Length: 480
Image 1 (cartoon, rainbow, N blue to C red):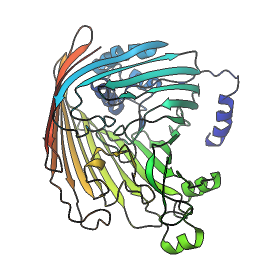
Image 2: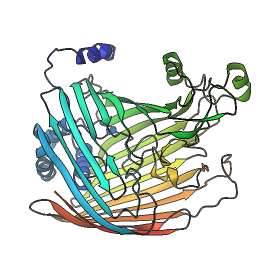
Image 3: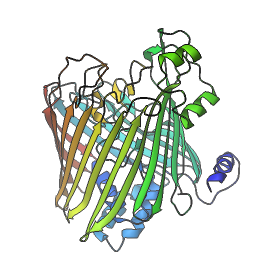
Image 4: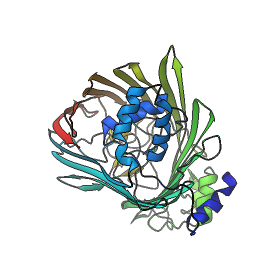
């Protein structure tokens, strides 16, 4: 089937009619109530082998059918929540938040939004025009910015859906962080292609994209050694996952930042760097003198992930993890190690999630680019990537614990505790050596009550940063 992918991509642009087609997406880090229910479903449901987000609604609805009798309460809640997504067009989500905060610290996974943002309006909707074309519109408006989140057009078929616009991506089985790519930074326009229908009995899924990043004021020149020029780097990514067994899903992810300014990049250069990253990565002085300053194409991040879902003494669980690699081939060791455990039914009304991440010195650093792997200085991946001094790239370790208590049929409490320790070793060659950090703590609490039409709630976000600054944010929200 994989050999037929180029043919399928070509047919996508023809006038041939296909039996099924494209799919809109569920919200990502915007609707916690719905997203919590979906995460439960993907542990207890059948054939739930999705390792990248946002999830396509078509896939989630297929999994939902498998729990109609085994988990009737969850089935009914999700059946009602997903009813809008079964229509050809709908306004799927709207929410207004007012808040007060005392710091400019960024909020994890919220597209660069900060603690002192006091007004936030969110909305999303979609429209399908037949089976092979659709439009998704979504965004966040606050007092400073208008952030397109899921605003794009999509077209194609079930094996090759093209998304063109502000489409978000999350390449990881983790829920509170992602080392490669997440919603921590702003969304930029991109073009991507992925499949709606899994390929073969191994449930192969893929996602590829390309985008132009924001301006970097000091890119190492590709023409003259030591010269810095302004420009916009390119960013390409790929996610590939498959399921060798019913309970196990494996995936591989790559992110390649390249070119920009006067750095010339041809198709052959890109292909060699992508498939043979050790050949022209982490170039030393001798190679630079021999091949020229343009020989090193760019900077790369990669990871391999797993997600094992099972039952232990009638307790369903998901055990997952990934190992990340940053410029490993041809250079010094620089990895990340991440593991998580999710118990969706610790009891009927309680769920618990534990996650741990650790990355080594110079993660998110790119020697060719002054901004590293960031957009507006916000890390493309883990929220802890900016818990450091600018131009300082220390190692770090973070933990998060999430507990959700459904203490009444219409009310729940969602609590997340985070801890981050920066500068785990003394081998950092980037930045000032005398900069010190404290251990950071965060507490995020949300109370939500469902109404006959919509829901309302209160939220608190407080803690201490690695710079020893205390912060807090209190807010109220209403959604429908």
